[in-house]
Length: 359
Image (cartoon, rainbow, N blue to C red; front, side, top):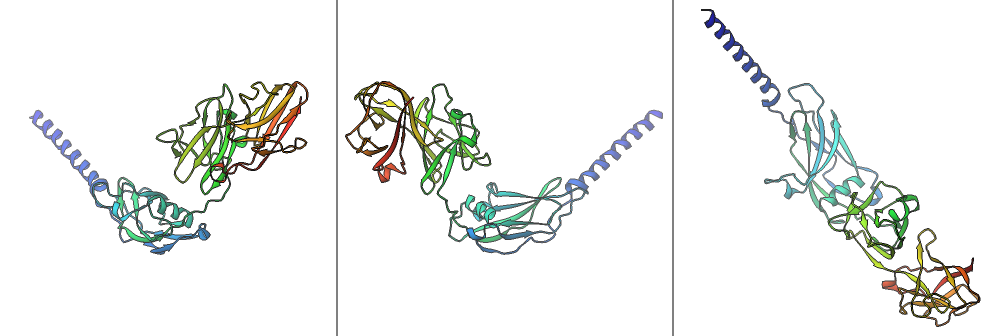
């Protein structure tokens, strides 16, 4: 008899625990949770402009969502194209913005909403449609019904200025990194000399800080925002660097000014290559010269060369056949400074400047 009583007690305990587990599961997992009413927005049609980029342009509000257990509820906002909100991959490409815990609204300024719209594919200055919904999360995620927004984004104007190129060549110090100057909208150009023994890696920064930078994407010549992969140059030498932020591509071309003439080691046959000083934006060399002639040419060729129309000045002229005369042998520091805005479209400037100083 005792054996039967024990078995009945054990069976009852198991059934009791099973019922308890099922009850708990029903309370926390099986009980339906929904938004009690629709979300609201402060406007359904927005024309965004750069002048109001810092203004609050959209307020999304929602009712409190009640889950079966007492704990903070996290909310987030999702934006997406209408065509991407159905099917097997519905909302997979949505832009998600955290709102916080136990909050019932989230505001967006013009700049942030414009970036969301453009990132999702809306064209600048063209009316387009997005949908917005709210996500509530505790032990699961539930979503509100979406609301359709009609948005006209703007194209952010590009201020002609500079981007920066920190890298191994200068110890990755953004404060002293080489600057690339805008030569047209979104296109930057500059020059770089990688010393022998220096690493070839670099990044591209939009300001003299690390808040935003580009590294290599799928290939070395693709720009990817905030990529940890360094761009690389082929090795020691001087290069012209072009960066196109419109296409997110960059390119490098071997490029160096040099001195040539009977005063130099190569005579009239081979240029002695100069190095680019990115801090003074000039080409420099310290070299042993002998008495004789000296002028300047690009890429060890006569296609682009400069000589002085008046050897008594520091001004040198494009395609001038004259040369400076070095009076006596010795060690000289030679600099060459030229304002090359965009040689590919505007040609090389008529004049440049130089200094030739005996050490």
